[in-house]
Length: 136
Image (cartoon, rainbow, N blue to C red; front, side):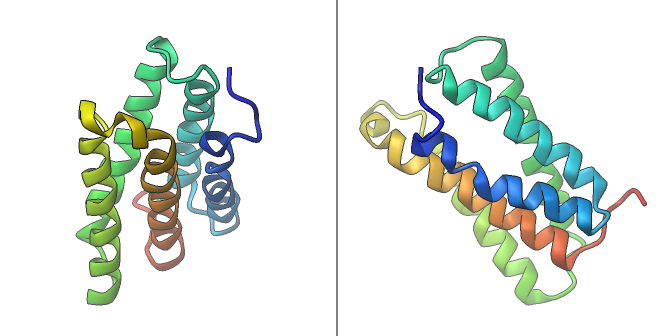
């Protein structure tokens, strides 16, 4: 079992900040999505990435957040925000895909927290600050 000080766990802190920012900004759909991602992702990583019910729920919640971000791309308020969010989303997608390659396993503990926790949390934060919720 991982400790709470492990980078796989502490790399969720930016998501927690987005969670509270989304509450402050009344962006409650992001609050729900990010809250679910943090809860199930931390459970998954505390169990050292064992395949169980938490791993499957983590996949569903993180894919849901990603799909939400992809839909928000169509409502970007400027070309700069669109390009920024698109590059963050593509970075996360790239590292998600190579994470399944056997020859990349040795880099998992370094790449996964950065590319699949920190990068998507920045993406989510940009959506909260610069875009509007779909459900008001």
